[in-house]
Length: 149
Figure 1 (cartoon, rainbow, N blue to C red):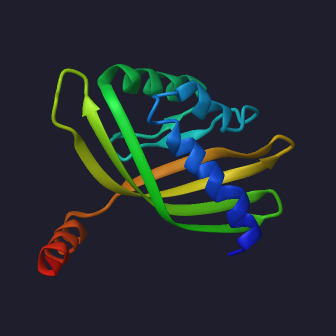
Figure 2: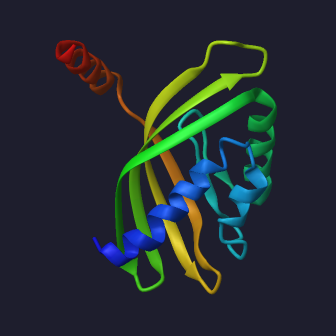
């Protein structure tokens, strides 16, 4: 882990996640490697990964119409170079969404693994995979929060 790498990547991750609040998926797309012919986005709720621009755009379009609001926060970022121009970033994320036509929000905690490529314009995603926190871990965390009062 490098402090310099963290300084470059964590703000990028935060900006990417921040675009969720305004549902600005076009801005999210600018942080992906436009030269990659088959980027991979695997949201935790999806059955299969979205591979390629058409699949990712369709997912973002569906998300825009399905959700009235979306907010996400990240923490515990771990950044490391795995090649001179490739970085691996893992982090935890909590998202809170209100579905269109609903009033009560839903939320989930996920673990994220992202691969980014260094480009002339800066670091860009080409692979992002979310994994839900398992039910046993969620139950354990809830019990710990309850025990602390």
